[in-house]
Length: 261
Image 1 (cartoon, rainbow, N blue to C red):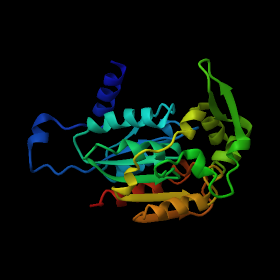
Image 2 (cartoon, helix red, strand yellow; image 1 turned 90 degrees about the vertical axis):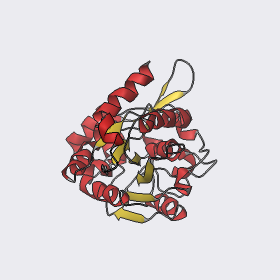
Image 3 (cartoon, rainbow, N blue to C red; image 1 turned 180 degrees about the horizontal axis):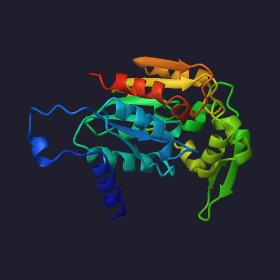
Image 4 (cartoon, one colour; image 1 turned 120 degrees about the horizontal axis):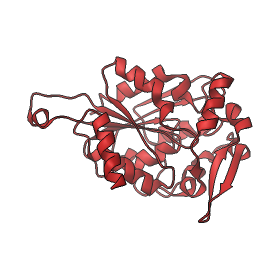
């Protein structure tokens, strides 16, 4: 029931078609943009991107991401995608990239994938594997783990290290708010391996920052080139939170993805 309510509420927010509109062959809808946040962030991190897309005429929704495990999280996102009548562009940030990589499977209305400093795992790879593929990530030293009652642990970024680690190109007060509202990810989720990467079948677009301390720029470049991304944008000096610091650049790339065939 909880899952059905989630799908229903997000579908309504997305402006799903009326029955009459869905039946009219003359209606040519713009794609709906579904934004999936990653670890240590939450849905409001997309606010600037949503506003920028709105001025371009696009509907955008920020899907809830439980951050509990790739398969389960992808299933939640996939359920919402299935409830959307229009074409969909899936956008994932950080660990959210791993989620959209699996969530697109089985959804014929997904037209393209956009990775915003997002993981693009191949089959058998995890987010942890990718972040450590090349030197440069300082995330491990910034983490503050919290043991879970049923075993395993949640991972947070320590508040005192959040600004430098996650959002160095944002004002300190803004980064402090983000640190206070960050969503933890399970260690198991970051270690869970991809099964069927949709970027092998769908057009992909990639944007990342040269100042990213979570997923080094070299890793992002490697993943984007391996996936033969149609467009790769490297933002000079941008942090891991570039959807917050550079929403217009992110929105522009997403708009490019809406033309994918």
